[in-house]
Image 1: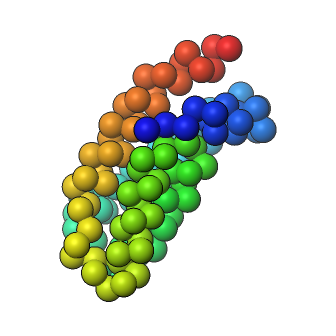
Image 2 (image 1 turned 135 degrees about the horizontal axis):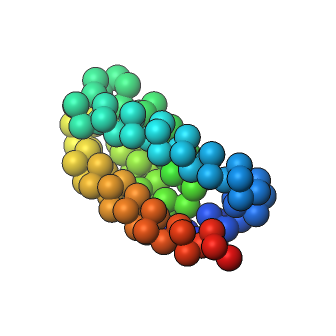
Length: 110
């Protein structure tokens, strides 16, 4: 669900202080996009939204969420936006976020 090696790598690359800020910005930006996904976004914007979410998720190690966003992005690009299970994508983000925030304090106390 979470690629902890990627999380550690990012933290080490940017430093603990900047890492906290990156996590905060990531969560804020992704929450905004998730809210729009919940509100049934326009099919013509779905591919771009999922592309953004995929990239953001990869940067912070949200593997499962990123994979689902990638699959949805490809589906939207084919013109099949109605086939994307947005509820599952949103649920996966929520469970990934819970796991991430639950484990993060242990990770950052190293």
